[in-house]
Image (cartoon, rainbow, N blue to C red; front, side):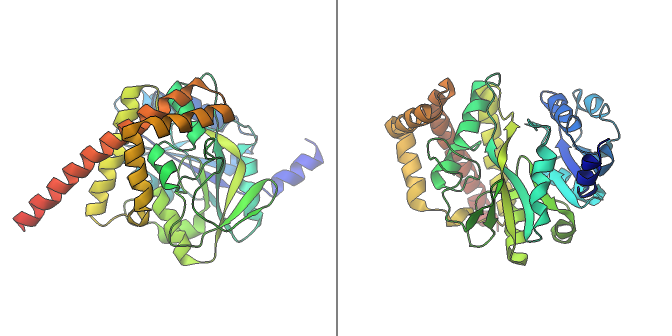
Length: 343
């Protein structure tokens, strides 16, 4: 091995990959392969796979990951799996990788850990979602808007580059371009929704912050912001997020996201400041989704910026998200009123 490689490896940080799974056979093999193919010393990578009781072939696939620690998550949810994974991890850097993520660059770990040489950097995540032509149209669409939820784009709190907005977030943040990454200050009452789909963070800080049973990714960054003058690196690379292969799956995941938000909010378990988002922007999203024309215009703008037929899903995606969120809001309202009467 060349001496230059030895020298470069000697400065690398240990990584504990925390990978929650539940019936993840659709995407897990490709996810694990992309991790295994990383140009990173194997002895510096710990793999912790936390299973929520899968009933398909997920565990069979997981056991093929050499050296992986497989842990049973009796609470089943991904948030519980992440908290449990932190307790099992022992390396300096924790890498929260979801089972539907693919690291599409063999140097992904090296590029994502490089910003940690700056002690003020507490976490890193990709600036983009990678788009591959072989992926389903809805997956490509989500990569192009920089979010799995078009509402986040119109509220401006997304954290990946959006091709029709031509920016990675709509929230005013203090940032510095360091060439290979942006250094973004974790200041301000409202932050972008950092923390999901390929998120690396210093383990010593997280271990002091993680609650007993659940770790909500975007809430974790809110807690980091409260604890000190930290920054997060937005590294100029991408990650594939195999979000939805069909319309049914897109609606199902949107419903689950909204349902879980209201469930945990009633329990006081969430800290991200959703309620402080712009009501005017929310009203615009509602009106634009109903009238369709503004959303079609944005889709055309996006197509001109980065041509892909998946852009034509945008008006329908916005309408479906509006419908799902409205339905879950009404269900939550009825539940709250019932609880008030019972009390």
